[in-house]
Structures are given as C-alpha cells and as structure tokens.
Length: 164
Ligand SMILES: Nc1nc2c(ncn2[C@@H]2O[C@H](COP(=O)(O)OP(=O)(O)OP(=O)(O)O)[C@@H](O)[C@H]2O)c(=O)[nH]1
Ligand SMILES: [Mg+2]
Ligand SMILES: [Zn+2]
Image (cartoon, rainbow, N blue to C red; front, side):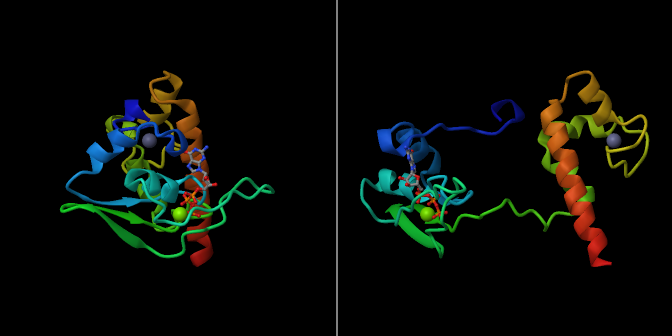
C-alpha cells in the first residue's frame, strides 16, 4: 500500500507497538477509526488512552471474524484538539455507493494510465487498447490489484443491472 501513496503504520496494541506513531499522526485532528469488525479498532483506542474505555470483543472461532462489538459511534477526547471516533466495524466491505464507472478512480495507481485508453468511458475490462490493461501486461500495475478491480467492478455492475 505504501507505494500507492498511502501512509501505513503497523501496530500491535497488545505489545504496544506503533502506538506512538499513531498518536503523532492523529494529533490536533478529529479522527475516525474504521474497518472490518474484529480488526482491533477499540483495542487500539484503549492502548492509546492506556485505559479500558472502549469495549473489546472476541473473534468468532467459526468464521474468524469480529462480532460487531462496537454498535454506535463514540467520540473520545485525547487532548484539547485531538479526538478519536470509535465506529462499528462492517462485516463485509460495502462499497455499493460507488458507481461501477467511478471505481477506477479509487485505484490511485491506475490514474496515470487512463489517459492512454483509446475509448472515452473505457471500462478497462474488455476494451482493446486500454491503458490500464497494457500497464498490467507490462507489470507496471500489480495484476492482483487489477483482478480485484475487475471482481468489484462486476459486482457493482450486477447490482446496478438489478436496479433497472
Ligand atoms: N494479538 C492481538 N490481538 C488484538 C490486537 N488488537 C485487537 N486484538 C484482539 O482482537 C479482538 C477484537 O478486537 P476489537 O478491538 O474488539 O475489534 P474492533 O475492530 O473494535 O471490532 P468491532 O467493534 O466489532 O468493529 C479482541 O479479542 C482483541 O483482544 C492486537 O494488536 N494484537
Ligand atoms: Mg470495536
Ligand atoms: Zn481502459
């Protein structure tokens, strides 16, 4: 993820690793922790506050997922200007708000290649002379990232078709 321009901080709340880096990053902001249920948002908040403020849940043995322990958004104040919102985790990553045509804009590293697509409104799925597909072929775009793009695109498209 780093090479796509995202800041990545590795943390381990149980071993107090990376906590200070997170603290520096969130300072003087109103921050929200979001992510799948069970990834450890509430636990991370507790370790930042060095206090058991937020309820921590378990991971289901059956499906290895969280149990939606946090059920409402709660705002915690760290200092005068720093707040953290704990939010309920999602069970699946729901992106149905995004339109299929817009999806490519959410893959940061695709951007520079879109100009090379022959067709305006290229879906980057089946078209010939697609800048993104040739970047994948040249290994300039990670193939797995592209495959995930196709998978999500098809899911969104299917959902859109059902609406009609
Ligand atoms: N080993 C280890 N376990 C962790 C860590 N962070 C969280 N856990 C465990 O993961 C489980 C879920 O943690 P939570 O903090 O409740 O997860 P959450 O993201 O707030 O989950 P929801 O509130 O359901 O969205 C708990 O059993 C935690 O003890 C960590 O850094 N290391
Ligand atoms: Mg939680
Ligand atoms: Zn294209």
